[in-house]
Length: 142
Picture 1 (cartoon, rainbow, N blue to C red):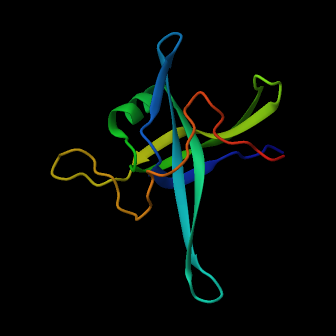
Picture 2 (cartoon, rainbow, N blue to C red):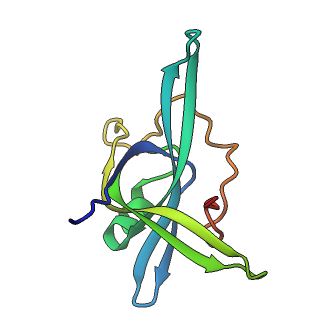
Picture 3 (tube, rainbow, N blue to C red):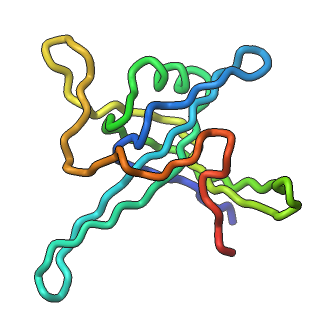
């Protein structure tokens, strides 16, 4: 039996896409995406939980992200999970799980043909500790 590896996310960018061009002028974009769930606890208090996902886009999607997306942009991303590993300078094995996107839909509303405006979902993306593209986006504890 074959497996299924599909991810569908709607969230806001935590910072502008970091776009690099690899050998052969292949564009790759990487950015953190925040998804927030809101629910009521047993006492009726509203609780919000935000999860951060590292999104990687290739070629045309990377160029689209560079041109139109910015910190706070609301997007729909569809893709697959990919986990990679490497050894750091001290020889410690590190892991990172990323969402490799193959579909991107921009959900921000346009204002009279002007630029896309960031959504106002109430989440402050400015105080997030997000590593740059060259560093591990997260350590997996298993």
